[in-house]
Amino acid sequence: MGFSSNGRMVGSSAVVGWISDGTGVIKQYYLGGTSPNLVKPNQGNLTFVPNSASVVTQSNRLYLAFQLDTVQPSTRLLYSVGPSGFLPVAPDFRLTEHRDKVSTSINYKTGQSASQKSPHQRLRRSHGILNMLGWGILMIIGSIVARYCRQWDPLWFYIHIGIQSFGFFLGVIGILCGFLLENRIDAKVSTHKGIGIFIFVLGCLQAMALLARPNIESKHRKYWNWYHYGVGRTLIVFAIVNVFYGIHLGNEGTGWTAGYAVVLGILFLTSAVLEYRIRASS
Image (tube, rainbow, N blue to C red; front, side, top):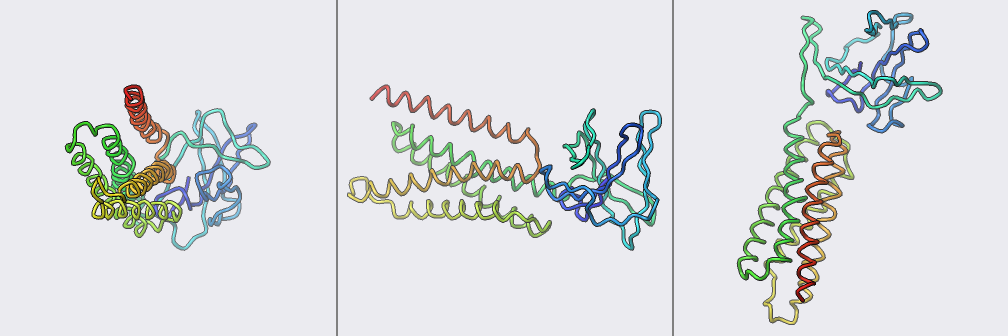
């Protein structure tokens, strides 16, 4: 059972109880992060009333009871159930990922409680999906068009510009959602934010490069091509890394990671097949 200021587990203090060899054990943990080494036993900001904590089992159910000494208890409570067959053991009493959880809010005046989704869930999802689609998928598709569809000149160019522009538009909205989200939840994601800003700068450089695009017969065209290809590929690499990193920070689980990995696999497989056809026909 966790006590949170914002409805999230990270940064909260939790009371964990279990039965070991017929004896009830109860400990406080500080949930400093999602990695096991950041979940610290015997730490946290909860103060127990002496001799008030106990844990008992009855009819295959575990009951946890304790009293806290506090002036203003947290209104956001988190409940989670650990995996079957695993108990924390000495000396580190490490916890593993829970198999189920729920976040609730409680009104101490009325005694009423209500289950709630993660705070700002819609904004978090919008930030992630827009950036994934804009920077992490459409930019790759646009580069595939530019590389392998030149036989349909000049149609390929307009399709390439259209896809990249739409991806840039979605990515910018996604970044704005990220800034808004950071302000609302006071997130500490400096690395993720820094990479995102770097990607945005690269996107702006690509947009400005279009204005300085020399004629195809110009002797400077090859240097412009090197610049354009280099910046574009760098943007794609950092976008992919930041999408996976963002999924990790958002605790979205393996489903989103696997889904995005499958999309990338399809895009890269398509590129490999088209590249083989080009080299085979040359």
